[in-house]
Image 1 (cartoon, rainbow, N blue to C red):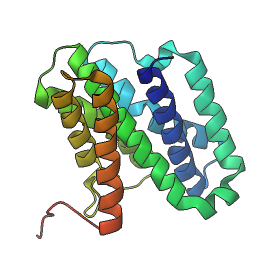
Image 2 (image 1 turned 90 degrees about the horizontal axis):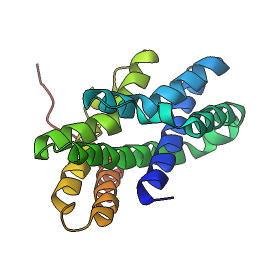
Image 3 (image 1 turned 135 degrees about the horizontal axis):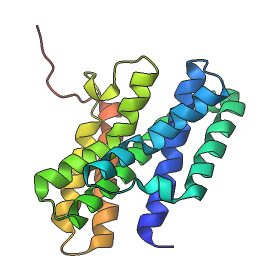
Length: 199
């Protein structure tokens, strides 16, 4: 199992947990929770793959789909216990964001995109699932909220991956993901935000 496969599994299941827990808080039924976990886990990556004319990776990996279904279902049944670990769920979401941002960037490099294209694919891959999750759960997407550095963190990690890739692809994956994760978590704790409209 190579590094990209490991990152894909960890990122997908981390996102599935965070998406399913939003469904629990919204009091969705089991199907709704599985759907919300699934779109959070694969929505960004599938959109990324369609843009570059690839068959979405998740549809080529049935084991990953079963993993999403199982993890989302378990999130529902253990939701009472998970409420005590909501900070852990924030970290799961940040981990998914970080890992999918570099996976998206890697796809961008594989189709010979340059810096801005790679950065866009990384941000889309990382934040796209969360965007779909928020729309389906009738929330303002977190990427648009003041006080939330989300897609920006994904874009930063993707850009770092692009710059480091020529020197060491594996190191670029780990460092790029680390940059996204660090920016997301530190921005939450320090309450960093981008400038917002004052109208």
